[in-house]
Length: 479
Ligand SMILES: *[C@@H]1O[C@H](CO)[C@@H](O)[C@H](O)[C@H]1NC(C)=O
Ligand SMILES: *[C@@H]1O[C@H](CO)[C@@H](O)[C@H](O)[C@H]1NC(C)=O
Ligand SMILES: *[C@@H]1O[C@H](CO)[C@@H](O)[C@H](O)[C@H]1NC(C)=O
Image (cartoon, rainbow, N blue to C red; front, side, top):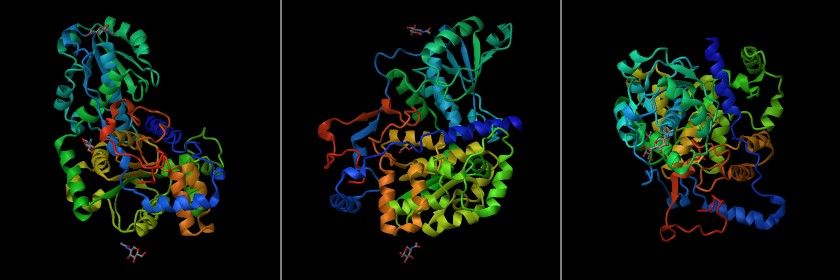
């Protein structure tokens, strides 16, 4: 339990130290003549295409092997067996699996199908084979890395000691693996790397980056029961509406308590979250307002709804909401439902069919992953692993619109909501959200490879390109 809690805390830390609230000022309004500015704004608002970025058609995902990329080293001539124990929930584990493939390649090791984390906060005893098609995983990467289901008995029997276990630092460079892991691998034949998530540098040479993309976007295919149910949900949404928004909400009590923010629930909320917060003895006293100003507070479901309406999504838009436990439950979701009455969750779309999956958080997360990946627009209120990994996959598969709230600037605006009319508010929200809309030339905030797989995104030749009429490429509102 204690261990689970610690892992959860680590997860939370990564949720908040992300770059939702990048400090970038887009451009200074003071430099622009006010009247000219408002005219431009008006034109821009008329022309907005919130559903799809036009420039996205100029790019495509590219992760083919280059001719100089040598064939996989065969099992019998490899440097040994690499065992990987992943860490965290499904999407955090996904980073570990992807990077494990690249590390096996760097070491010329035979990769053993990664082991899943059964002790994380997300408590799930699913294994790789319960989530991903293991045969496909092995065969589709066979030219790059040799992967086996387990260490052969013969090798196990010949070992004098149990496999050597080690944990490498976050974001290690290939040189680290070659200097620190390879000698042990050669000596011991089998090495296990534990807590394996985000353990490989975001910057690698291009062939290895493309290998990561082949692993993440092609070799990891969900097993059939998950695929089937996920696509059934997508079909149900599409039957009702040509296009839909998927919203991934994280609003669990623990997470909110950890944030130290206030979410508008009065004394009751302060008491309840304060109580939970006591669990973490070392948390500093923080000021609710300061945290909010720094953009450290995830948007409430209502705020996500407000942002979307302000960006121009109409009240008859269909939304699919993926979430775990929501603090305050229905009461908290009600204001979002009022803004978007066509509100759906997986429970509302397929009830009985969900039963076999209910006690497996990873399988449920996989189903949500599919519905969110297929959505026309994807929005989150957090900067967790799912948000990052999906943002990366959506960039790779054609820059599908992905909206990340600029919490820092939006928070200030939400506090002022009652001091301005709706038009003004909406205009300001649009300004805050520039470069947070998943456009091809959004700034690569943070450059985490799983979120910005830039080595795997190619530009079409210029004669095939759609011209951007304005000369401001960053001005996504223009269509
Ligand atoms: C891996 O194998 C390639 C040849 O396929 C070789 O050039 C490279 O030096 C080897 N690396 C290691 C770490 O064994
Ligand atoms: C959307 O808003 C309009 C008025 O602005 C209202 O008449 C209509 O019923 C609303 N649609 C839905 C689905 O709530
Ligand atoms: C995500 O969507 C793209 C198409 O837009 C598809 O090619 C890809 O396989 C999907 N990924 C998953 C995991 O379903």
